[in-house]
Image 1 (cartoon, helix red, strand yellow):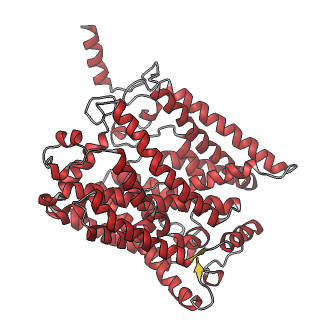
Image 2 (cartoon, rainbow, N blue to C red):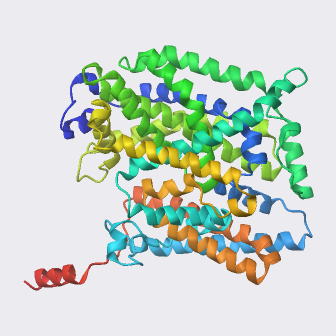
Image 3 (cartoon, rainbow, N blue to C red):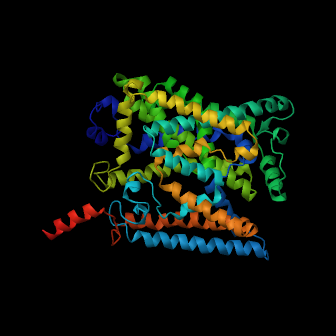
Length: 526
C-alpha cells in the first residue's frame, strides 16, 4: 500500500491507490478485522475436533508438550515419553543452530540442499532437512502425507499452479462444508427447544467406533463447558456490524457493501482453511487473501482505487481465515489437555487483542529504524509487498486479465475435488482409505514440493516403527514428533535475536552445477 512500493510498480501509483503506514490506522484496522474470525467457526468446533478427528499437528504437538510437564509422578511411561521428547527437542534445536552457520547468503545452507538433483531443486522438489516437517509427517495420517507427495509430483505436470491450487482447495473445503451442514441441520432443528448452546450434542455424533477412556473423558469435558449460541452468532454479527461501519473510515475506497459481502462468505472460507490446517498443519490464509484481491479489486475497478480495495480486502480475509484456523488449533490443544474450551476462547480473544497492538508497534519500530524497508536490494526488501501489489494491479482488470483457459482449468479442478470427495464417501471404508485427499494434494501446487519430501520421510519412519513395534510407536511417536517440531520452532527465537543484532553466519554453503562451477573457477582465475 505504501508509496515506496507503489513507485516500484508499473502502474496504479496514484494517490487513490496509495496509503502509507501509520501506527494509528494499523492498530485500528487489526482490531476491526481480527476478532470476527474468532466467532466464525465456534459452532463447528465439535465437528472439527471430535467428529472429524482432524489432527491439527501443531496443536497436537503443543498439547503433548504441555501434558509432558503435568504428568503424574511415578508414571513410568510418562517419564519415558517426556525424556524422549526432551532428547528430540534438544536434537532439533542443536540441528537448527548447526545449520545456521552455513546460511551466510541467499540460497545457502542445508535448506537449499539439492538432494534430488539441481533440476528437481529448481522446481522446489528436494529434502530441506527440516525437523518440523518430519515431525508433522509423523503426526499426520499416512494418507495425508501420501496425498501431499502425490500432489508434489503432479506439480511438474501442471500449469497455472496457483489458480489450480485455489480451485482444488475451494472445491474440497466447500464439499466438506456442505456435507457438515446437511448432516447437522436435522440435529440443530431437533435440539432447538432443548438445547440453547453450541456445538452439536452427542446425539448427532457420527462416531460409531470404540473410543478409549481418555478420549471419552476428553470429549466429555470438551462438550461440557459450552460456548453459548448467542455468543457465537451474536458476536459475529456485532463485530461485523462495527467493522462494516468503521473500516470505510480507514479505507474510504473500501465501500461498506464490499465488507458485507466479504463477511457473508467468510465463514465458508474460514471452514475451508481450518479444515486444511487440521489435515496438514498448513494455514493457507494467503491463498484466500489472493482470492479476495482478484474479486474485490475487479469489482471496484482501477478508477475507484481498486488496487487499494483489493489489498485491504486481502488483509480482512486473511485475518478472518487465519484467526479461525488458529482458534481451532487452540481448541485441539485444549481438547488433548482437558482444558476448558471457554477458557481457550477467552485466551484467544486476549491474545488477539495483544497482537493487534504489539505487531504494529514492532513493525513501526522497523519502519522508522530502517528507511529503506521495501526497496529492492536493501536489507529488508519485503519482496511479497511488491508481489501482492502487482497481483492487485492484475486483479483490477477482472477475469479478462487471467491467462487463457485459466477459468476453464479452475472449473475442471474444482469439480474434480468435489468428485473425489464424493467417491471417498460412497465407496467402502477399506477402499476410501487409499483414495488421496484433494486438499492435501493442492498444497504443493501453491507453496512448492520441498516439504512433501520431509513429511513423507516422517510417515515412512512412523510406518517402519509401527511394523517393528506397534505399541512402542503408538506410545513414543507423538513425543518424537513433538520434540522435533518444538525444538526447531524454539530455535527461531535466538535466530531472530542474532539477525536483529546483525550477527551473520560465517559460511555460505551453496551448490552449483558443473558448468556454472567451471565458469566461477574461470572468473576467479582471471
